[in-house]
Length: 49
Image (cartoon, rainbow, N blue to C red; front, side, top):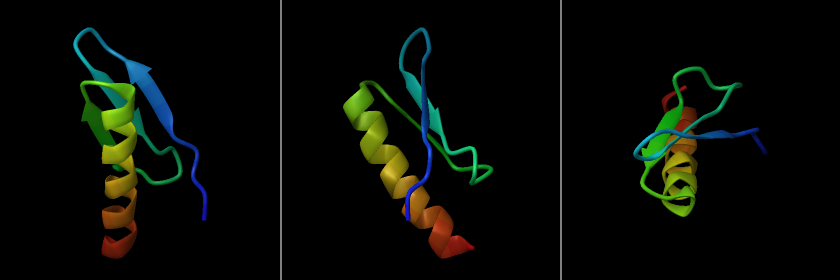
């Protein structure tokens, strides 16, 4: 299954969220770190549902 992920640059880091999974978000210092964090967050979010 695939989900759209939104990555936004803030002053000091990157933030990402999944519009189809309310409350599923992650942050990181780089885009790559943020992508890894959101993948893990999606897995945990789906397990918790």
